Amino acid sequence: MTANRSTYGTTFGLMIFLLLISNITLAQEYGLRNDMSELTVLGTSSLHDWEIDAEEQSGKIVFKDAEAGQIGQLQVTVVAESLKSGKSAMDKNTYKALKTSKYKDISFVLAEVKQTTPKGEGSYAVSVMGDLTIAGVKKRIPLQFSLKVNGDKIRLAGETSFNMTDFKIEPPKALLGTITTGDEVTIKFNTLFQ
View (cartoon, rainbow, N blue to C red):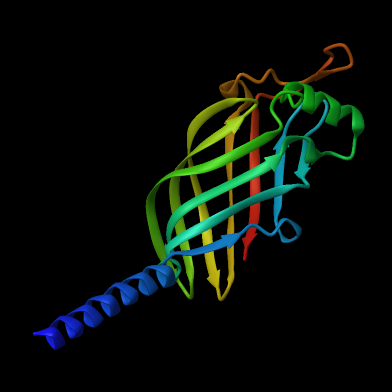
């Protein structure tokens, strides 16, 4: 009887251990590589088109199963004042519009994966819903991107467009209002997690 209890205890312990190991193997977390990622905001104005690049990003992606492209968590944060156009006056107007003295970051947090479509060789087309927070205003937006799993490197690439006024941001003006910025902006990203 004692031998049976000992065998049962050992077997039960082994099963729990294997279950934990299999969950650890499946749930894989990767950190955003700022030095190998790009995020650009593009827009229009009454004078010319413009673009601003993000210099400081952070975040992570967690997979339920990386080999199947099954994302469990995704979050990306951009330091608002790391958005740089190469023109200090434009940057100043941008930071004023984004209220960066109060709201330091812009963030995207995954809310729901709608669809993951395999494209072969570790590539997937992914459709999600997520919470985008800009200047303290959070809105749920749809986002489509390509996902490429290559060993310990995960690459996400895509773009999305929205109106600044959706986030209660007044499109910046310059030269006493003679130059006006268009309401719609497009964000293009090519993000590496490792």
